[in-house]
Length: 380
Image 1 (cartoon, helix red, strand yellow):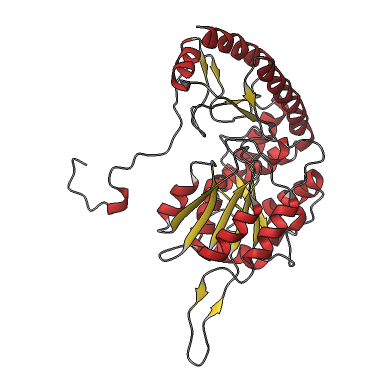
Image 2 (cartoon, rainbow, N blue to C red; image 1 turned 60 degrees about the vertical axis):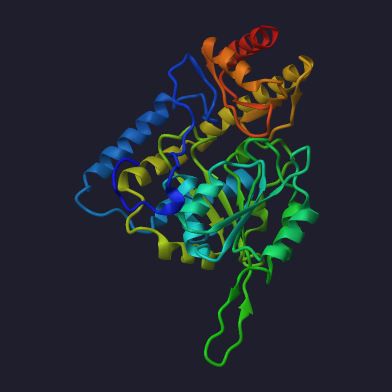
């Protein structure tokens, strides 16, 4: 750095996280919902925000009980889960929710474990909380090897295990049986807690985070880890977001469901009034239109499955996806294919296993343009 600043040594040479922001006609690189809010949703949000603005001289509700109740009600409808409002936590995107988890349970001398390829932000959460970040590989088909996961937990005694389901960038969902096995392995295999006066050291439970950012897009019959949340698994947290299925990436609202004791631990590390009154009002308004927004999810699922079939018909490998994106390839030179697509006005993502590309699911018109551009890119 040019300035003589006391930057932390582990941040020296690091660059800010972010996918390319390029103004092209078709942007399918960051897994956004391609459908903007309807006029009815916009009107509800605008009205709610205007009402909230009347009280902007006051701090917002610090622990946002109304929003937590509305999110709990939504999860009951979407996944037939039954969390109580006190089992819900929210923050500015699921990124901040994850950061709260690592702030509360990670830190120096503690480990965060995950399995790659997976979401590229996980090491940054660990780095920013001074938590050691350790990975183990997934199988060649990108599914999780539950036996290997159990072995790693036994060996490492991590404070936190993060598992994305569906996984980003592969779209792979976790069977509930694998999650149950990992939860059982995590009992008593977290960090050793220091001995006090007259008391010996004791083993903690490792916190298991199931990142379900794309869960609403899962195929029929694929369960949610929300079924396992509660007092039987007090070390489980399931994270969600309004960025994807709700088409509200600009709102920045992520949340989790967990046992109330785990949620209370996150309340310790959150900044005061971290969710603005405007964010709370807009989120509540969006949640009131959940039926309309969920109808979009069904159409995106259909478009995704059709794209997978089309890719396979072109002789490419396309993995079944339970998310709103598809990983496909392999290409001898994926960067050249990516550049040719960009030159044709289509932006997708170079991410994940070598040779593969990832495309978000767009509107039917956007997907048709992607197909035409991909045929030309491969043939060229």
